[in-house]
Amino acid sequence: MVTAMHKFPFEVSFKEISENPDPFVASVFSCLESEFLVMPKGRGFVEYQAFESGYEALKKTLSGFTVMSGDEVFETVLSIPIALIVLRSMLGFTSSEWAYITTQRTGIEVTQGFARSLDRKIRMTPSSPLKVSGVTAARVRALVDTACRLLEEGAPQVELDKVHRLNKADTKGGLQALGNMSAMGVPYAMLLYERFLGRPFSSHRDSVSELVGDSLESALEELLTRCGVSYRKTKRAERIEGFDQAPDFVIPSEFNPQVVIEAKLTEDDGTARDKVTRIQHLAELSAAGELAGLPRFEVIACIGGRGFGVRREDMKKMILATRGKVFTLKTLDRLVECSRLKEFRTKPGNI
Image (cartoon, rainbow, N blue to C red; front, side, top):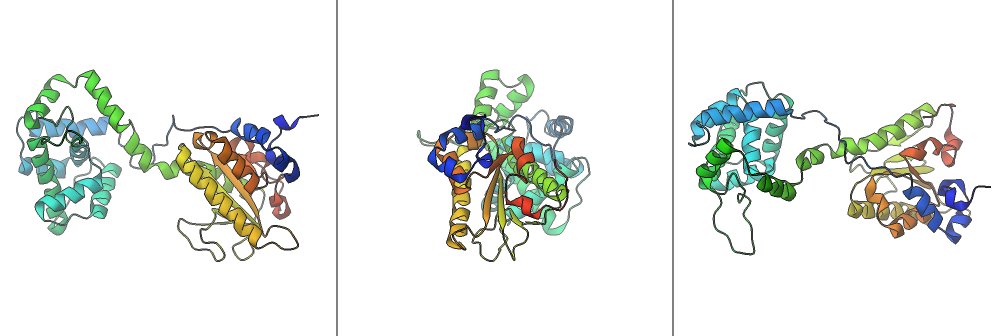
């Protein structure tokens, strides 16, 4: 006979779980996987060759970064737009931050939405020349002028308990620092230090965070479709009657919720704790609408990522809130047969 230590919580009665939940915490932990080492490129991923072409174009325009001319940089950006991404990388700003400081310094309103849209447009087609006029041209020119002035000025002195964002190896000393870095390369220790401060691939990871999470939701959708289970997948911030926060999936529909599923993937334990709280709240809503002593609907958690594998107490809360219905990508093939979803199955399909 298989012991509880080897069972998953969805395989046993809630009575068995509530009497001793710890072994089931261990069983869920054992099948959690992390995807933080491999990320989807997604649309708009900039290959190094494209980035380098923008860098070399800027370097040539500015004579090895020994001069700084807004007029010439603007013309370069129009013909080789990826140079604008390189310029932002030199500043070390997000597109929204660049828009904000540009508006502050020039008086030309560059909205954060405009800056983000421009950034994405360039990343999608980095080699297509920019055709701008009117307000758009003025905003792009303002961004370029602001960047050139900031890079030329370098990092100002600040109080000892503060650090300026331009206090980097390549931008601390203005044009001289830029020229030196361009000519001799960055000292490895300094490169590692700045990488430590900024996290490698952090901007890209943030931009594809939804794609990372979509892998779990896509697998879940595929399973439900193959099994012929009617479901309603909600959109972000969508309002569903009876829920102050809509679950990710409602089965069979929002008009008659019998099963709700939260599909969450996170690599951060703080975010995981927030997701556990959300799942607990769904369980409370279900209990509040009990009929004949039974929960109004079944709550299922489909989770992934190392964030959920950190705090044992949080996992215990999730297992108890869902009455054992906690699944991962490794156990998703058991989802239908080990939950109320089997009541809505119309096809024999599986993952």
